[in-house]
Amino acid sequence: METTSQAQEAALYTKENPLVTKVTDNYILNKEGSIKDTRHIAISLEASGVNYIPGDSLYIFPENDSELVKELLNELDLDLSLEEETKRFTEEVNLTRPSSKLFKAIAEKTGEDAKEIQSSFDGYNSVNIIKETKSKFPEFKITSNELAENSSKANPRAYSIASSLKAHPESVELCIARVEEEINGQMVFGLCSNFICNRVAVGDEKKVKVYIHKNDRFRLPEDPKTKVIMVGPGTGIAPFRAFIEERNSLRDSGTEVGADWLFFGDQRSKFDYLYGEELEGYKEKYGLKIDLAFSRDQDFKVYVQDKMRENSAEIFKWLEEGAHFYVCGDARRMAKDVDQALKDIAAEHGKDPEEYVKALKDEKRYSRDVY
Figure (cartoon, rainbow, N blue to C red):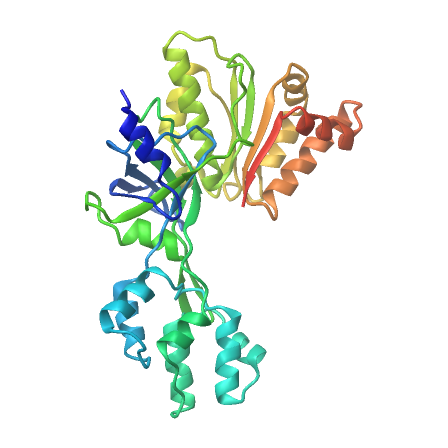
């Protein structure tokens, strides 16, 4: 049972005062043969008093790679002590995604065009930019203060929570795509995803700083008997794993719960069915309805919005019965395509698509967690 002191302590965990804790689990969800590296990460909340609700997010404070920081400091004129600079460039400055301000600062010192510098250094981290600039301009110098002032901050990164406290009372779980790609001959590593996936050892005490972000606009229906439709390809599965765990826990307690319908998609079913065995178990035990779209399993691409259109009549029936509709994932393409598919389904059944979707939103039956 949570004590008063625990509740008070939990309320203090914010961006300014995060919970310092440890990673308790870290494994790759993709099978061998996938071109992706998607991780299941569990973070301890033991004795913290921290609470969260499915739909919430967890912010993680990233850190730069220690070797990259050492390499950087060798290239700078330091304004502070080595210890202070190491802390600053480990925790406060984003070295993997240089700011446009840095290219302007370099242009002022070298007389070159800032836009041309930025274009030529596309994909470069701050260390390699400084090294290359020094190679071309041997007299080029930059101080640690100048670099810090002209760089992006290493801000905490939000991840949708992929667990229910009912199922995991002392931890918070995440589904994270580790970012690693080659641009312009340079390996580009996502700052936070590589920190949490590759640079924090499981069980290391006080290595991770986190805090919960409440998201009251992305919640399960108040009435558990309400049906829910969830569309979450890739890491968009995260909040829906939390939704499903929450509702299954209610079912186990004897509560009457409405049907759950998940639309999930990724590249290949053999390698990229995230939480596949778990979800198939829920299908067998709890009647979870699942429609899958693996884009590269056939000659033509199939996406979650295509599966929605294939199930147009039943989706419309569920919505007419009061079902809630949720989307999580890429805002630029997937979420727009899903929104259009929903409008197409409404139009197919004689409804004005804009008015129908607007009504769902007004009734808080259409919620999106997109990024």
